[in-house]
Image 1 (tube, rainbow over the protein chains, first blue to last red):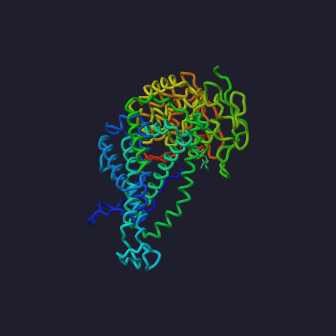
Image 2 (image 1 turned 45 degrees about the horizontal axis):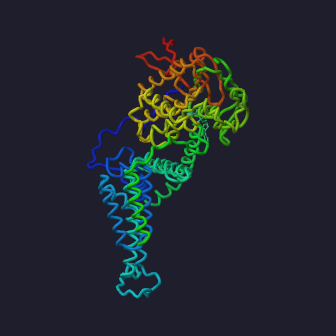
Image 3 (image 1 turned 180 degrees about the vertical axis):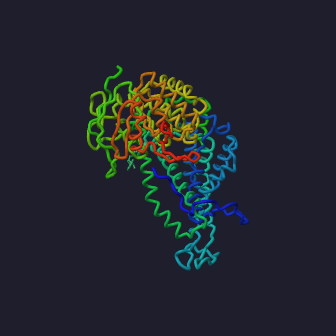
Length: 299
Length: 267
Ligand SMILES: Nc1ncnc2c1ncn2[C@@H]1O[C@H](COP(=O)(O)OP(=O)(O)O)[C@@H](O)[C@H]1O
Ligand SMILES: [Mg+2]
C-alpha cells in the first residue's frame, strides 16, 4: 500500500494564535432557533432520568399519579371562569410544593406553552375587519397600520385562554418533574388505555428524541465548520438540502428499531411485568382528584 | 447434540435495492461452532447476521434452520427462543425505559413466567456487573455500558445461537478483554456463536472457524483460524491488514500490519 503523502499546505502548524479576543463560532439565526427549539422541546417533554426527590406525588403509585394528573388537566378543560381556573392552578402549585418540585424548573416547562398561548391570543386584539371595532371598543391604538383594540371583553377572553393553558399545562409539568420516565410509562400502562396506544406513544417519544438528536448534531457539526454566522438564506438552503438525508437517516434507524424488537420476540403486543396493587393512599388521592374533577364539571 | 446441523445457506444473496450486500453464500453451521466472520467495513457482515436472525429474506437462495426453510415464519417462537442477535448499534437495540425492563423484554415476549424472568434478569445483571445500573435509562449510559446492556438483554433470552455484530467496536481495552472472556465462557458452555468483526485478534482468541468476507460481498475463505489468520495474501486482499513501508534507522523494509500482523519478515 502506498504511503500517504500530505500536500504542502497541510504540512506544519500555524503556531499559537496571536489575535486578541476569543473567536467563538457564533450561531446564525436559523441555528439558534433549531437548537433552541429542539432543546426546549426536549426540556419540556423529557421526564426525569434519575429518581426525583421524595415527596407527596412520588409516594403515590404511578398509575394513580398519571391518572390523577390527567383528571386535573381535564378539570382545567371544563372550568369556564378565570377564578376557579386560577384556583386549580394554585392547587397544582401546592402539589408541586409538597412534591419538592422546584418552581424555577416548573416555570421553564410551562413558559413555552404560555408563549405559544400568547401568540394565539395576540390576534384577538387586532382589528382585522377594518376601521370599525366590531364590539364597539374605542381604546384603539395604531400598530403597523392595524388598529389594536383593547376591550374588557377581549382582555377577558385572552386572560381566560392564558389561565386555562397554565392550569392545564402545569399539572403535566409537575408530573414530568416528579416522575421517572420508566414510571411514567408504567403508569400509563396501568390505566384502562389500550396498550397499543401506550406503546405507540412510547415509540413516538423515542423517535422524537432520536430525531431531535440528529437535528442538533447536524446543526452543531455545521457550526463547528463555520466561522461566519451565515446569512439566513444560506443556512436555510443548507438545512433544506439536508432534510432528505435526515429523514432517510431517521427512517433507517426506525426500521432498525423495529427489527431489534422483532428479533427479541415482539409480535405486536408488548408483554410487561405485572404491577403491584394500589394502596390506601393511592385511593385517597384518586378520590380527592375525582372530587376536584366533578366540582369543575359543575362550574 | 454437538455437531448437528443448525443452519444451511444455499446460494444466498441479498441487496438493498440496487446495492449488493451479500453474494452467493453457501454454508452450513453446526451446533457448538464458534465462528468469527471477518471483513472490512461495508462487506456485508451486518447483513449476513440479519439474514441468520431471520430479519431479512435473502433476495436469492434459501436459509434453513434445523432443516426447515426460514421464511416469513422466522417470527415463530421456537426460532426466537433459540437465536439472539446483538445489534451493531446499541442505541437501536435498547428501547425500554430502564435497564431492568430492557433485560425483561425478550423473555417476557417469549412468554416466560414472571418469576423466572425476574430470576434470570437478576442473574444476568450480577454476572455482567450491571446491578448498579438497573434503574437507569439505557440511552443515558456510556457507550461501553450500553454495549453490555445490549448483550445482557439478549442473554436473558438464553439463546442457543448467539449472533454478535462488532461487539468490540467502541469498547475500551479492559471491556474488550472482558468480552473475550465472556465469549470464551459461551464456548465452554457449548453455545453456538457467530461474531462479525474486523478485529483479527478476536478471531484468533475465540474462533474455531473463521470466514472472510471481501469487498465483492462473497465469503472468500472459510476454515480453521490457523489456516486463515496467517494467510497474508488473503488478508491483504480482503483489506484486513496492509503492507506498510517502515523505516528503522536507515533501513527501509516492508511488512504487514494489523492486529494480527506477521512479523517474521524483518531484514
Ligand atoms: N439499510 C440499507 N440501505 C441501503 N444500503 C445498505 C443498508 N444497509 C447496508 N447497506 C449497504 O450494504 C453493504 C453491506 O452493509 P453491511 O452489511 O452493513 O456491512 P458491514 O456490516 O460489513 O459493514 C454496504 O455497501 C452498505 O452501504
Ligand atoms: Mg456492520
